[in-house]
Length: 314
Image 1 (cartoon, rainbow, N blue to C red):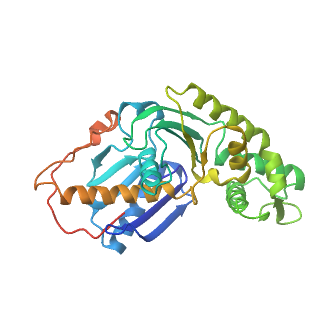
Image 2 (tube, rainbow, N blue to C red):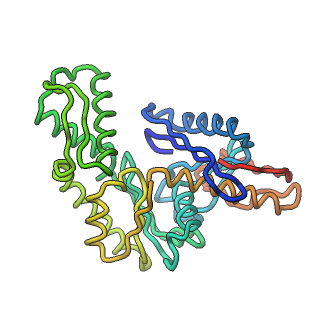
Image 3 (cartoon, helix red, strand yellow):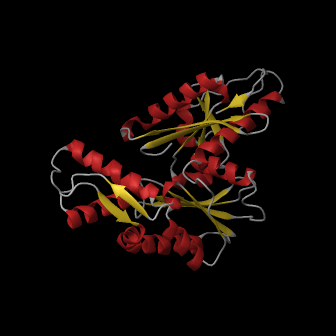
């Protein structure tokens, strides 16, 4: 669940294969939690998944992560809630992409900013976690929009609707340029839609990318323990120049998973599989063992679960 995007993945509880995946774009950030819950409820009905077999991965306070395991979950409204970092580590560790790495730095480049968390993927222990708004999808889009407007001119950009349409068009182009050399940007330009080339995209964002690289390097150097690998997740981790510079300059292995934008949702589904398996082997009436993060204590209502057949998890 991001600031403007919610993704859901349903997997089979037996073989962990993906059964369904959905995404919701462009909603009011103030409604992001309700949008995510509505998406999961809709998917659970389609896939016949009980609410107790759902894990919702949410953003949390990076400064509080070191107080507990990244894999901790707590119960709210009959579903389990986990941190985004826990879901990310669960996917990466479970798919073998962190084999041999005792400590990793997870660089989550999202829409509103970037978070780097240093953690042990085996235990979930978080050693440090810091965040910056220096670089993210929204700031990239703002820079690109300013460049395009100054280069091609605006026919009309006074209404909120026109600004919103331009923002969506620029974001779509940014996502397309992760795999294409050129993307078309619709908008209020005097001559109609314009083309944005990858090399121009790189030039516009170069200074910001280098600033982010310097910041990430400083976080790794200041970490309380040696870092064995850097993992790039989040929607902006798809930016080719970002991956290339990190691999060239950071002097440690860089793991760049496929589809980093959906990795958190997939990891949350795998955590749901773990929860289902745990309940199957727990005596009737037993309670969830994970400790809830202190900042959410008022929402937690630990209850016992009874064994019952489970087939899919979301």
